[in-house]
Length: 321
Image (cartoon, rainbow, N blue to C red; front, side, top):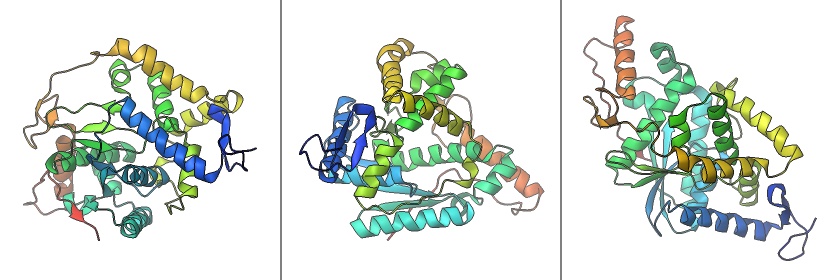
């Protein structure tokens, strides 16, 4: 197996696209492909200031690294979720990455900001942990972006993530979710744009970049992810990919190019300001505020919070390092 560019011994086989590359040319290809995706979908303007959601895993750290190499003013945001040792190690890895490269990092501690981490939040809200966690992360990412003057939030979602979401939405048809799926969610008043520059890279391709760049990342998965349907969808798609290299990319690209344009406008609903926090919502009070206000009421009944405790929806990020 030789590099298609220089003919030297290859280190990475890109099976989905039918070629292999040496270390230097793989790293170069990966960065250029990211840049192409950004330009193709007009995700970011050259040199733009962008907020990067950083968990400490390979995808988010690789994205932060690539965006910085491409000249964007990439500021990391890490949300400390209070999931025991997993969260502690996630923060340590993220802080080390930022410190070693001189990159700006913001941190929001969920427990410090609102009184409870994800385990307690799930128990008090009656939601599964991933649901309570996901709702909180989406809200905080948007709030920090809007109040910090960022037009867009970049996330490290890869091809495996996006294909699994699409697979799930097709198995359980949801027109509104299908209409919104894509590498870019445009900005709206009170809502920062969401961009996914890695949407065409497989998990293995992102991992290869991370290893070849010598990026230290948190290897373990979130303990709450065990049993998630998304893992089942990924496993099924991996079986197809093994027999038909490139199937996941064709699946996602085919949907985005041929099907999704016909769904534009589906599920569009009028937005209004949340009566509690002022951010866009479809009802009088947004899901985030409803969840946390219910949590505070239950916590007071159980005497986990003093009776005078009041839920404040706005979290102030701290600057790490």
